[in-house]
Structure formats: C-alpha cells, structure tokens
Image (cartoon, rainbow, N blue to C red; front, side, top):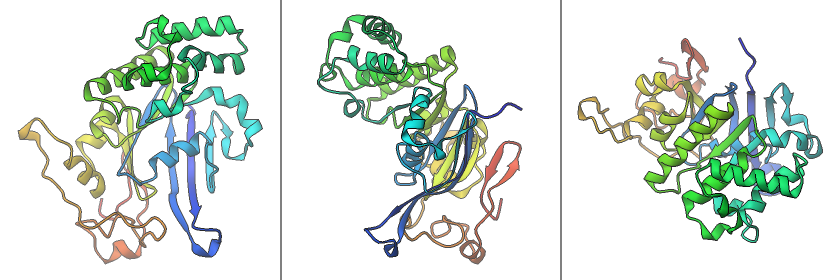
Length: 318
C-alpha cells in the first residue's frame, strides 16, 4: 500500500482564553486523525464552528499546532520553523472562501500569479508573465485579462484567478476552504468542475472543506465528518452518503434537499445548540443532542473504529 501524501495524527489546536492559562482554552481541534492520498480529494464537512477551517490552516501551518503530527510527504511540518517551511510552500497551496481578500487590489492579476513563479520557481519576469497568461487561459479566462485588476472581475472569475495562482507552482496538495460558498449556484458548478479537470491533468490532491454536502459528494473521493473539533465519521463518498452510521452524519444528510421524493430521508431535527468548545461535554461530544444517547454516552467516550472496510465512526451503538 502506498504511503499517504498527507497523514494527520492526534492534531490539536487550543486557543487560550485571555492572557492567563487559568481561564481555560477553546478546543477548536481536539484530536483529529486522517490521511490524504496522492491524487485524492478528502472532503471535510460539519456545522459552522466545528473546526474544519482550523484544520485546513493547521495543515498549511498558517497556525501553530498545540499537539499532534502533520506528516506531509514524510516530513513532520509541526517541527519546522517558518524558514524551514519555505521550500515546502510551493507544494502546499490554498484557495480561500473570499478570493478578493486574498488578491492585492493594487496588483494586476498577471503580476499576482507571476510573483510566486519569480520567488519560488526562479523564473525571469518575462517567463513568469508568459506562464501566468497560460494559467489564466487554463482556468477559462482570456490571456489579456492579465492586465486587469481584481475589482474588474466577478466573484467567480476572481475564484478562477485564485485557483490559477494556487496551481502555478504545481503543488502536491491544495487546501480549498469553502471555495464556492460565496458564489452563485451556476458558478459553483463551474468552479467545482474546473477543480476536477485540474486534478485529472496535474494529479494534485485536495483537502476540500465545505458545509455544502451536495458539492462535497460531487467532488470528494472520501469524506470526513467533524463535530466539535473531532472527526466522528469517515468513509468513501458512496459509503458515507448511502449508508451513514453516526447519528450526527445521519442528521446532516437528512437536511440535504432531495429531488427524488421516493428516496427522501426522514428529517432528523437535533435538539439544543452546539456545545461550547471551551467546555466540551464529557464522554461522547455529541451526546447532549443525540436522539439515541443513554447514560453510557455521557460517561464514556466512544472509540473511533472501523465498522466495515474503509468506514470508521465513533459511536457506542454502531
């Protein structure tokens, strides 16, 4: 079996409350394990505030981890300082939710895409601009657009520009954090299809973070479901959507609109609110809202285990 491109083990990120450790900490990510294979897309889904975006930023080392390991191509990123990380930056790229915020408004998009090619790839200014124009055409825009500024494009076009910049250095992994959530539905489909075409051409791996389950189902090979800073279920796309095991996953999928009335799931309405990550519940983190919870759930944390080949979940009653 081939070695995963990315292997995350026991990943934790706790944000201290106030200036004193006595005030406690928000456990944004609290012991996460997953892998991403070469050329694969792993989708991470969950409610807002579950920690999925924090996981993406930790993988990119935009945040320092509290504990755990991030093994990228056999290198533990958590042990590297910023100087040591710099040579690896070209292999780890990102596409954020708001492309306009990630583009310099005073720089033409041609220069924005050419800049990393000059700094990381060592190309001359002319070579970098030629490569930038080729990338702009690759994502479905005209090469002449290289002379325009970010404000002169629509949201979907700006996201194409962000993708062009992300693939400019032929990365091995792209972290796409809600890359289509701010776009119109028709544009969302175009961007998702573009990401799929680029993956076919370049064999890049994606860590695709989203709350849109329909898009995750379309683009992902495997899916991990997060709740309150922990992964509660992971499986192949078809396994998870056709036969969800964890009660939280079942509730999430029941909320997805289903055009086929005959196959429509019964709606599962969860009671209560998502617990405070600074004071998570004992035992199973989902037990205060779980319709199947018993006394054991509040006292004993379930083991994240393999239920069937390739399908893992953490629940006492699976």
